[in-house]
Image 1 (cartoon, chains in turn orange, blue):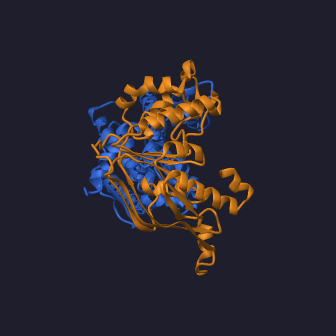
Image 2 (spheres, each protein chain N blue to C red; image 1 turned 60 degrees about the vertical axis):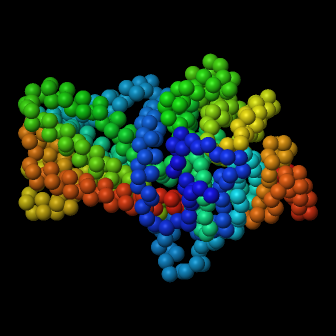
Image 3 (cartoon, rainbow over the protein chains, first blue to last red; image 1 turned 180 degrees about the vertical axis):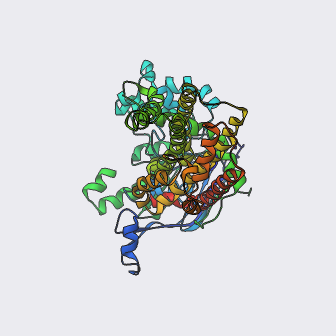
Length: 268
Length: 275
């Protein structure tokens, strides 16, 4: 539960930012989707018959160092977002441990905390506070956020009048001003039109610095190769490969071609 | 290698490091009020009267009971009307916290799955929303008090500790039920019947003094009975509440708050996998 401005340390390049050891996550899901009292009573005395175990992460170990940008690739359901949630402390692991050596900010979904009946301006505050910023930090950053979003006067219109592109632009702009020690971005770069995508990517490149660690989850392999200096590939919760972006991506693409299907093509 | 700032280990029911948790909660207090304000605005968004509904609701509610007592009932008992409205408003503070709090976690799925923050902020926001709805009712209750020509005295300052106890109870209930609802979703469906029963078992539609001694023995188990009695004494009769009423209300409110908070904090890391 570390807030963004709680800790701002000077980190030496190559010093460790995140250490993940033997991480495992098993979901226990019941056949009944909602854990109602009725479902509980029905399953009483029936043992494990009505539960299913899902291995979301299987013995994953990795280190992330300051000054590095780690790309995370893999097909849908590979465990990428789950790994990010465990690293950021949102979901507890079933086995293993995660040691974090700095403040973490997550951009796992855009517009978290936004209320569509409020104006863009009010949502900048709401979204910023949800991300762990203080009111004074948002005050200081407000002009930069509004300018980055390119919304102009629409910033004072209710967000329910926004197009999905406008919504995404404002949401990314709020997140883009945060400057934590460790930043985790999950599929947030493919928002808005081509111009805004490029702008978002440039912002991420600006955030690369020796005393910051970035983790980027994306299906956009060209972006990963362009921005990251290290890549991991996850498949069905297992760490398949880790290393040079071009090599890991090539290996992943080869694997995807071998197991060719409509859905896997879409990912690549 | 330096010490890690934070370590994430497998879930084990138990309290988090309280110092760090409280610091994080205090630091994010602005989010609680902003979130509550936005939810409240969202509820009245698009209506003609907008936020004016915060005052219109208690006015219309007291109008309905005016119709019931004075017009249909033919009564001219001003204190009965004042008791009913004042007690109903405090009852709704607790009941709204409970009904808002019960789904605070399950409906906050998007926030919980994508952001790390003290989860207790969500049921706390539900209590803040109820309190923001309660404040205008307090003004309406005072206006009714003046119109009916009921007495005023310094004893009415007892309203502050009574209200503080009511808020403690409302917070405890919101926290406890939000947590229970993660594990047993049925509780949210049962809640309307529970609150309705609580309304009839509490001295709102009647006064505590009119309840027979044999029934009162059972009311010792009702966390709201003596709290509402104390509120009525202070707000309607401008008299100090009895010591027993205050102690009974405080004991229940503290007990529910402590149990609810412990239950919630020791399990909140588990919420994300259960949503």
